[in-house]
Amino acid sequence: MPLPPSAKSAFVNNFESVGTHKNGPYLSLKGAIAWRRDVLGGEEKIMAYLCDLNKKGSQYVADIIGTEVLENSKETMTNYAMSNVALPV
Image (tube, rainbow, N blue to C red; front, side):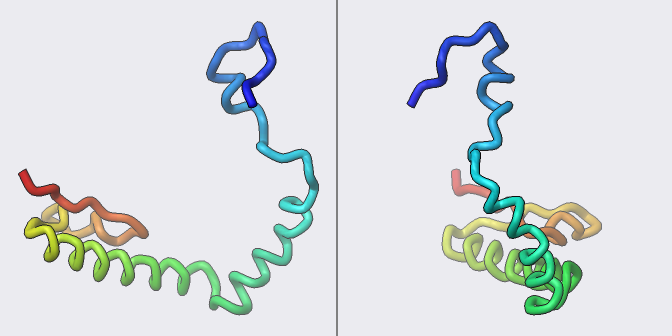
């Protein structure tokens, strides 16, 4: 559904809405944080898992398409939850 006409800029019109008028997301935040801490082992453990999955997954994709994972000389670009893989030319 399109937004109603407004004198505000297109940027403000596109991003000022939180996307919901329900309180559920706000009310579940405390439980979500507790679940990440108690069930998943906390933010450090979650991040370690994501980094490991990222390294294995990006290398797997690079092997399939015959390219490489883009990395710097200090090998720190893949220490996150996402990486860049070169596309074949």
